[in-house]
Amino acid sequence: MRIQILGSAAAEAVPALWCDCECCQYARKHGGKDLRRRCGYSIDDDTLVDFGPDAFWQTVEFGIDLTKTDRVVYTHSHEDHLNPVELEWRGRWFSHVSKQLKLYGPPGVFAKLEKFNLDPAKLSADPIVLSGTETVCDGDLEIIPIVAAHMADELCLNYIFRRGGKSILIANDTGWWKDESWKRVANFKVDAAIIESTFAFFKGNLDYESGHLAAHASVRFRDKLLEAGTIAPDTPVAVNHFSHNGMPFQDKLEEYFSQFGIMVGFDGMVFDL
Ligand SMILES: [Zn+2]
Ligand SMILES: [Zn+2]
Ligand SMILES: [Zn+2]
Image (cartoon, rainbow, N blue to C red; front, side, top):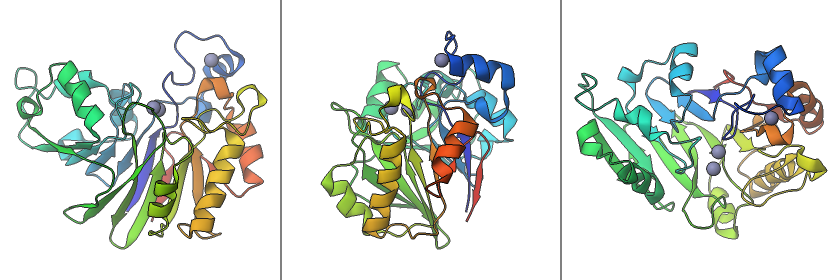
């Protein structure tokens, strides 16, 4: 299984479009790993996790052929993860689409599509609504949702993906999970994990964990996965999904997280499992 990070930023991207904070100014000047598209992932050639406002740029940069995509698995309806406009172009007035696409996600994702008058049937897409307690087998891919603690009024999902005996946990946007999710994840062992650190160094509150995680909370999240037996001490773990408000300079993140044996995500990072 090959997983690629297509975007390592939270909602506003880095540099954020209108922002003149220190981090955004630095990112504009230096580019490289400090440029961060909105969060998303590809799994092999056939699966995308989230499909946000940087989808076009991601497909071009990372050589993704959307005509080969079988499914998009959404985490939740926030704008950085679901951009209805880019799905609209699957409509018959705009494109010749001969392949059906499966759309997986919690109910809020489909409520949002409806709000934008996007009927999956008219987009050659099949909606599959997830409750967060099931395991779905789609061909040789297993999709195992874990309930996140990200929004108070909407079910948000993190996922374990398993294929060919290998698996990865993709955990953004998380907040600090409730007990049921820690119990559920303890049933699984993964070969790699990606944990959010949206607020990284935000205002020096490294323990922030409400709806999102800051740097130290991400380390504690990793430790709790170890405790649960979901990962082993040598399992590769990376942090991802950074807001410019958390001052996510790549070198500073690496300096901090390397102390704990955690890698720092960037656009294009690949996990070959
Ligand atoms: Zn997000
Ligand atoms: Zn900024
Ligand atoms: Zn979110």
